[in-house]
Image (cartoon, rainbow, N blue to C red):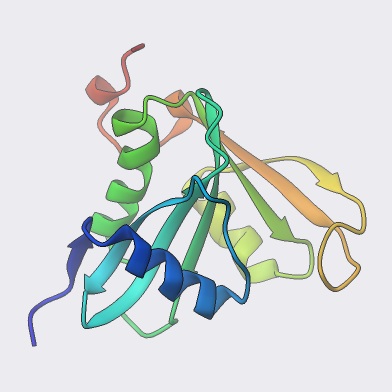
Length: 146
């Protein structure tokens, strides 16, 4: 078996894997990058609702050790900010998912508000955002105004 790496090809396969793991469907403009191999996907970052300045981001993994590599994180932020030229990313996290809230804050996302009773369980959804210039995972010389 080959070593895990960034998966950029077969976005439809990545999106289908993430939808099955996450238990929901994504918008038709969804794009994806993955971590692992095409035969052994470990994590997928989904980007949807592209507006020209922002997109919504979802991180889906199988939770096996090694899914959260620094290379995958760097690629996950490079894709929307550098390749996509976006100014910000938005994430929605159920308030009950403390682990995901901590992880997003560790990545540099900031809490921007709440969608009251917006989660499937009837709880709140926390709105989190990151501006391109706040991103700690990509080289600052890649973040010039486009």
